[in-house]
Length: 417
Length: 148
Image 1 (cartoon, rainbow over the protein chains, first blue to last red):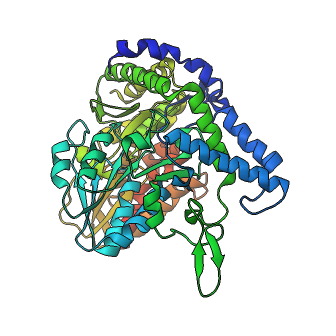
Image 2: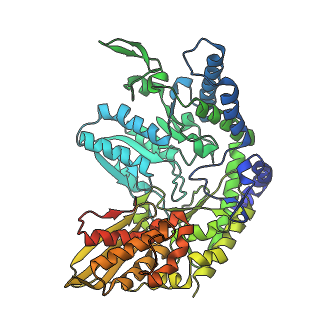
Image 3: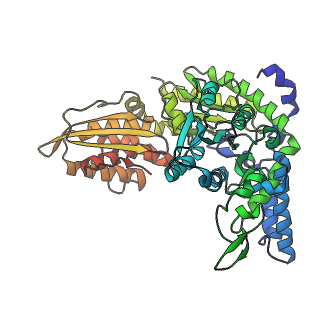
């Protein structure tokens, strides 16, 4: 996307002001102001989220859905209020379609075991892409081992884009589920999920979208997309870790058996037979991460107070700036150059190993991720053992990018002969 | 940069960029594979032990400057040593990385250029990968050794 197109909207987002909402960003690391560019791993938390969690533990802490006392009522109200916020955030039709999980990973495992396992037969196919995170590969491999199903993988091109014609060819009358990442964590590629969902639905194939890297960076409307399942993690959208969301169409959830058994997910229990609670509780066994749910609700309020359109525009403009700036450092090669990209810059630097890059830029106060990013098949595809990755969020500025580029020059300096 | 220079000493950079003994060995009497799943470093180590003495040592693989330099310096250091002497060096090197070198450093020689690594806990595994792989090779372990 062109810089000019976004310059006006990008200016509308005051990232300096946003930075002040994140107390952690105001510190020195190794004698330099912290430059946090590891947002694809996890995002920092605004004061509002920290306060919401503190408030819960200071004033309302209690178990949910069972006490008649005041604290339990407050806790239940706050926790369930967050479910409504998630519903509105994703534009889901009903609150029963929002299941709280431990994270994207658990959401995907839930779909694998509760939705797909009962209906898949030996020789049936599960379709994924070559750019999936391990969390959208391994649950399907486990299911294939359990059932004799076959995993099919849509290849990617040199730019890190899924090859659409290959995708169309891989859809078969044996395909039982399509599982696609919305935004690749290792490449930054934004997949054309609307088009893919429509194509899958034309063959009556349901679709799961891994939205972990998308929700904090662009508006998502599950009904407009017509997604059957959409998963994301709270901690990648300024909320606490240990909590995630599975959106699923109610008609599908109603057909699915419980994922885990325990308290809260039952209606009645006897030694002969138990009956299940109504949606969404059927899928939420045990005392949930109440503070996490409340924290996520607060994080979604925060994101919406800024506006995802503005965040998206800001990050696109910053990505354009960063892409240009980083390529001016001689010897850097970007891994992932899709036409439609989110704010993720994965790169390698001549023969300098990403791990060394990570340590050296950290000495300059710049936090980036180095490694295989839980996407070993992507590394394999590009013939690299690892990459360095800078990933952007709403609070990042051009000054952050400039600090990264300065630090990368230090890397070169240290390794020069 | 002064702190970083303790980690990335010139000898380390040199061995990281131009590793010694980075080759396939023939013949081979002892071999092991090492893997650091955290960063994807892979190491294939081969030894030729004749009459109870390490005659030759070579490695291949991919890794960061620290792990490559450590493997390079290790293979240089091992030649002419018995497996028992190599074990003693391993103990001292491991101690250098993890407990302030309580086991002494009289066997380490040039390997002490890696002393700075102990200040970077996340990088200690990079420096010790080659050594854990050596142990596996000496013990003739069939399974790849992992730093995790």
